[in-house]
Image 1 (cartoon, rainbow, N blue to C red):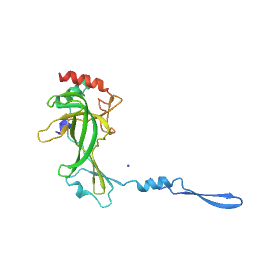
Image 2: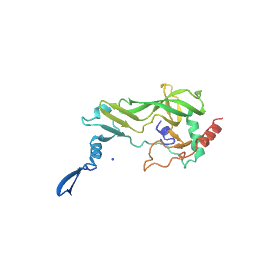
Image 3: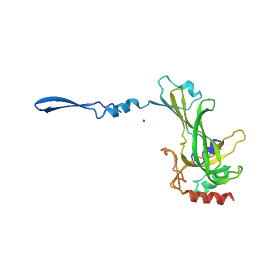
Image 4: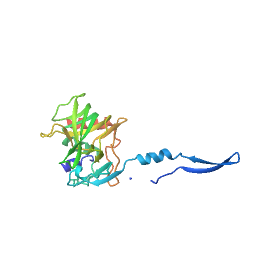
Length: 233
């Protein structure tokens, strides 16, 4: 599955009030300018973030008493790479071959939960199908509600907000590449989803310095739809 997930890849100083002396009617008046007071309060209320690597221990056992936000980073996985740089048509052809369903989905609900024996967080994504681009093994209609299990997410454990990997945002439309698994009710992903903005594909999170640019970034949904449907015939 690691090889399959490769498809389309998949941190201040305190400011105090200023004091100024000026004369008013022969008297020296001390004026306190507290313009930075709101900023200081914001600094004090900003949560402390601790970053930890993925480990072989349950998340709940790795939390500290003073933790507020914990971010779990995942190392690079060994993947199988093609022997040449893929073109956009080749990438789309690979996506069609690996996916049981390719569709745009309006995401309504995202719920994080512990996975992998409590060592990671996955997300239950519920949304409504807006457009079906390819459906091989599961007949799907526009307006149908589907459930997707996303590898990553966030969950509050006690008073601590824990984030693992990348998160999916509600009230957005995504292009999803999905597959069915006999042991799961929810659909699994075969590649990174893309946010649909202005009818074009947009990477849902920032590109890391070590990552190559996604070939589908900026491609119009209409063009992707055309090529996927051609290959799905």
